[in-house]
Length: 160
Image (cartoon, rainbow, N blue to C red):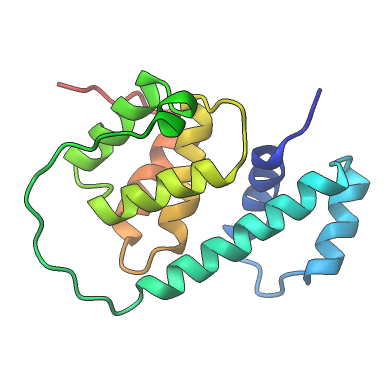
């Protein structure tokens, strides 16, 4: 099986990011552990860079005042359309309609999906990316908890 960046991110998220442990390993220790688990070195570096950039994006959004936005329809660029199938795009719209994502967070999700440098993204992977993005977004704890239920308990969301 060819491991990719999202596989490394999922391993890190499940084992470290969302854990209650107070001591987290440093970058070098993580790299060694990930190599021992069997992840390729290139994918490890991409995943750690992805997380580092996610942290920077989250820090940039702290304290930003945003004005109320008028409802709009998101037009996807060709690159986004090639990566995000109709199911993923529909799910993002659903999450926005129920208040889990706002327009800004949706854009962060799309940017982070593109940053995975993957050939394709399926719905389960999209859910994990949304969960990781919400984890890093300040003030989005309720949305994170809702999304966590969807991912971990595999609750089927009904779109009306």
